[in-house]
Every structure is written in C-alpha cells, then in structure tokens.
Length: 257
Ligand code: PEP
Image (cartoon, rainbow, N blue to C red; front, side):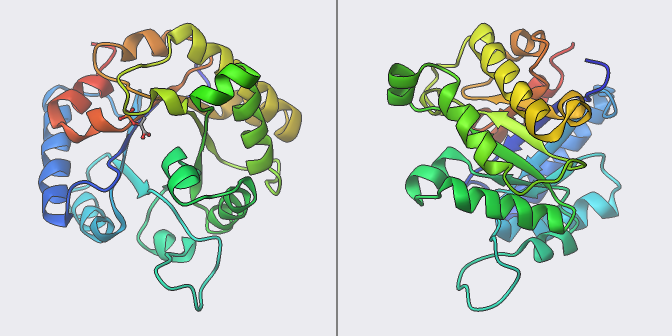
C-alpha cells in the first residue's frame, strides 16, 4: 500500500546489555548501509531493554543513523510513587519514537489487562510516542472463538481513549506463534489484519485506518517475511528471536532483495 511505509521492528525482549546493544546497533546500521538499504522505503526500529535506551539514543544521534527505537513497555502514570516503573515522559526525553504496549508476555506474565493497556496507550500519546499496540489470541482462544474475535476485542479496548488523529501502530501477534517456530500462514495473518483495519475504520475513521501500519508477529524470519509482506493488510513485522541476529534481522529488513 503506497500510503503506508513498511516497518520492521525488532523486539529484543530481555536480551543484550547496553554494551552489546551499542555493538549490535552499529553492526546493523553499517550492514544495511553497505547493502544500500533504502530506509525511507522500509523503516527499521529496535526495542532494547530500558537500560540500553540512553546508549542507543546517543549512538544513533551522534552517528545520525537512520534507525528508529523505542521501549518495550511504559507506565500509565506520569510520575510518583510507582517503584520500578518508567513514564512516557522519560521515554520521550530519550527521543524514543515508539513504545510497545500490551505484548502478550506482559499480558500473561504480568497480568496486564485491556484497561491497563488502554491507559498506557493514552499515556504514550500524551507524550507524542507512537504506541505499538500488540494484540493476539492464544491457542485456546483460537479454538473457542476463532481467529479474530480476541484480537479485535483487544484492539477495541486499547483504543478506548484514543482520538481520531492518533498516530499508532498495531501488531497482530498470535500467542501460539510467538517463539514457537509455528508461524501463522500469510493468509491467516491477512485475515486478522483485515479485521483489525475494520476496527480502526469504525473507531478512528477511514483516514487513520488507511495510514495505520498493521504488523504481523510470531516466528518471523528471513525465509518467511516476503510472503507476509505480499498481503495487502500486512505492513511489516514485529520480530522477536530473529531480531537478535544482525545478519538474520538485516535479511528480514531487506525482504525486497
Ligand atoms: C514477539 O515476541 O514479539 C515475537 C514476535 O517473537 P518471535 O519472533 O520470537 O516469535
């Protein structure tokens, strides 16, 4: 779709300390530049742990690297007595463009609710961060409710407080496909992405629905990325495991080659 620049996003999860992050980002930027990657044609973003972000920011701004970056989570609160939390204001100060919200690991391991996800999305938008909102069904959901019911409900809930001009990204990540090697088929990804775009249209209007990128995530690698990118409603990928290998992640970014 000419109105949407594809986005390849690497979710590092709890991997790479700040020294490893510097080495990784340098290698990634150099190898993509070496390969003449057109960063305006396919945007690249990395999501390091909080403790890496200052180092990544410094490197990217000093060397003017054409990479975007963001955090893997954010607090819904502005500041105060919330031990261990990180506010959207802090992330904005570090020049994060994006923040992942509602990743399935946070929903399951930290019992994050749809209401908390919605509050975090609102907090991110207040500070002009683009929330990368993750939705997706478990294997049990899939069996009980079919493919799109849970992701559709999660997206509706996440958008509860979002106004119509919002700049957001949505990631469809079936929980059964994350880290399992059992990726959804491109047809499955497209089917749910199309339903999610309808939700965007109903809640935020046609314009936002047309311009919002919907990513697929779940066992994406260099050998399957191109097939997802051929689907009309899939505008990129959120990559976990395969984003930790510079060569492999670079090859995913360069899916057009
Ligand atoms: C993820 O956790 O966002 C993800 C997609 O992981 P993986 O690529 O390892 O399945």
